[in-house]
Length: 145
Image (cartoon, rainbow, N blue to C red):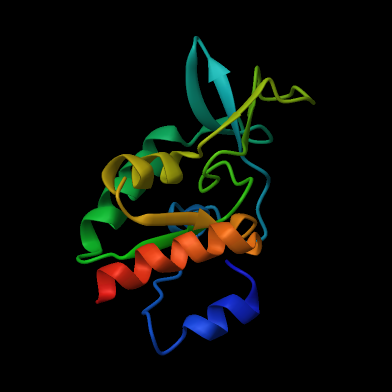
């Protein structure tokens, strides 16, 4: 989630709906890492230690969760997450590769960006940048007006 001071400043003005997609698809906490990999030219969400392909489960969760939201004014997502990273989720050539070959959106972030392109959507890292934060808040509060 976003920095505490930022979130605290928004409380009372917005309603938060915190969610952990990994927990929602049954991975628990703590959990073995998951990662985005390219398999046969397609991005897949896998858990290398178990060999599980979690792509379909995460896509189903994303659709179901986003369908359940009703009115939404913005999203604060988790940077670098293979599910919630907006632009910095590591993508690997294979489940056991050490270095990423690219960066992109996680599966949940991809669904959010596709479904709500007009909304304020940022991660906690982006919100530490003053201009990005101002733009995010302007978009959120314009919808609340």
